[in-house]
Length: 67
Image 1 (tube, helix red, strand yellow):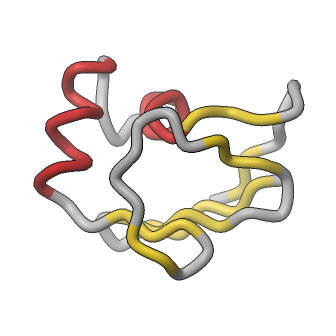
Image 2 (cartoon, rainbow, N blue to C red; image 1 turned 135 degrees about the horizontal axis):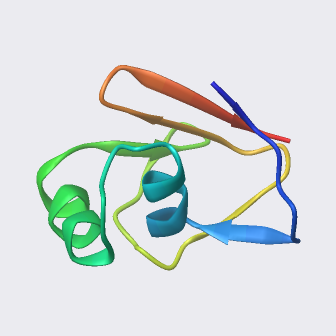
């Protein structure tokens, strides 16, 4: 999946919502505590993590490339 940024960055919780993995910020918080999310190959569970162009996020069998 390829996501093109409109701004300098998107937070991890916003990205999960844009990709229809979760439907709300509260759901994103719960998802990040229960599921493995890799940002550039490293586990991360911070909702506010800034995802920038060139980053890759992996979760739930999905790979999301940020452009």
